[in-house]
Length: 93
Image (cartoon, rainbow, N blue to C red; front, side, top):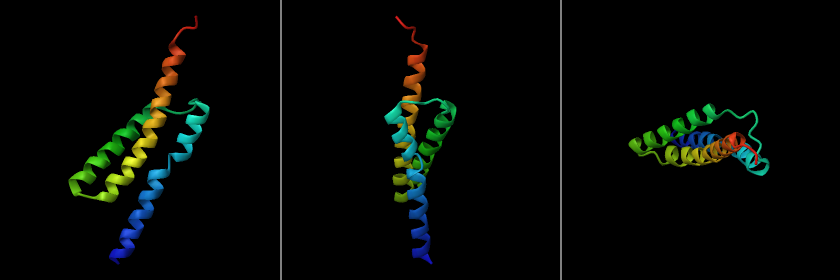
């Protein structure tokens, strides 16, 4: 039963970690952030950071690794959202 639980944890971790990979790739390629919510990605990033810290507290390598991967993808998208919103506010010369 312990092996099944570990396997299930890895499957869940991998799925959670790569959930934003397609969106990250698309956002980096197109720079199109229309329809992406800044507040959603901020809240998600805070949540992932909290899971990483909790994983450190529990000494859970799975929790730290998979949530770190997910956080990186979310931060990429968050960076592009913020960068594009700032560019939209800049007046054209």
